[in-house]
Length: 189
Length: 185
Image (cartoon, rainbow over all chains, first blue to last red; front, top):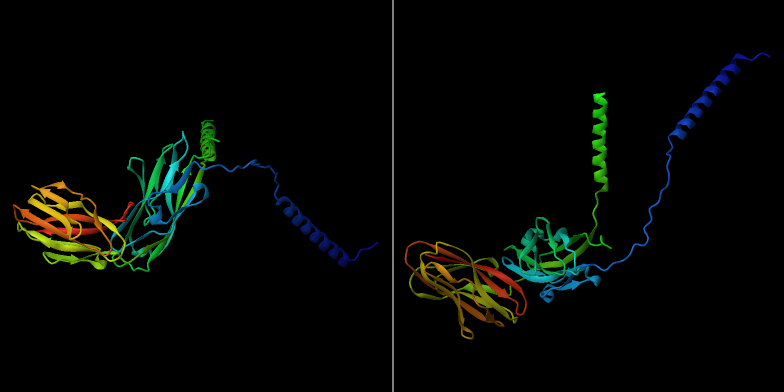
């Protein structure tokens, strides 16, 4: 049987195309990921009573202090100041270490602030221990954090110190959110 | 051969360091405190000029510079403190800095008004403080308190006494600080 020259060319073309497709399929196959599943299981994730908590200080009424459920959150709604004068709230809230044995390292950070920040000359949050010794100062303007270790069973006071500039207006205001990071609590459960 | 050992050692160090980083971790809890909002408000207590000496009251009437001369006399009204509201306050003076006070033989800064009488706040005798923090003095609803000073110096020069006027919300530890500078020539 005689095969025409045209048929032979067509077959070669088809053969080449099939080889190309096969190569593509092989490339696709080998580029696929090979993986195994392994599992992490957390059971149970329990809720614990916080050992370091906030509570009202003696200036809570003036500062508008409100401590959240379980003492893990605090909000101040009445902090204010007069222009070109320093307002000091010596005891807005207290930080209590309710643990009978462990001391905890805390880091106080500025999380955010907004508003008429340019009109504030000074804004400090200071932490004093039971002997009224200064243990940490957070400069809210610069955001420089402070670290301190609260001893077991102690109650430390938190002071806010506010100074508006001489040109501040009575409409000026700012909002500040701070973060207290407590390291080590929960590791001995 | 040596190159082989070196390579193994180098790789071991890298592996060890990587493992160390991998096992490092920390557990912490994060609490939040929010001040919502911190506002500037019109001063409820203000400073006003006196009738003797020279007084400079600054913007918002919350700080002042008082200038007096050595005269062995009493400047009985160099500055006044006005309560512009019906709120009650307590006030006192506290020294926080000074310069060239060794020439001051006798210097007393005090409050007075017709209701509460005299309250000595700051004493300097023979160039040293015998009292640098005064007792609390009531500043009642819409009341005015006067600040007076007596000066006796034994030398020429200029002395400065830097003072806070503390204005306390009664029964709290919330207070305001005004800066008052006394310039004594």
